[in-house]
Image (cartoon, rainbow, N blue to C red):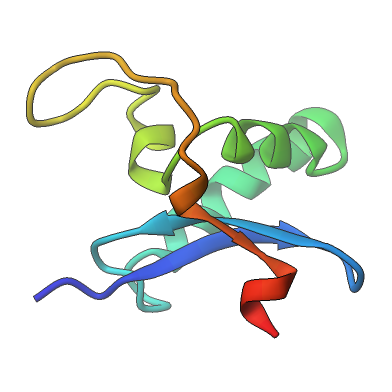
Length: 91
């Protein structure tokens, strides 16, 4: 059974996120997100690169596979607004 969730980044005024279908609990998705954020922070001393990369994909899994579908092998980089979580939807 999937544990749906999202990975997001934002400020008190604005928030954006991307959908994640599987293992979205803290001990499932959490370590992957933390490792990715830390990699960017070590390289750039901030998370701007992580935010830009995350928001350039439609979901977390697509980001971790560099846009290659694990099922069909097709490359896809198209942003779909149905996967974007905004502040208005969170409130």
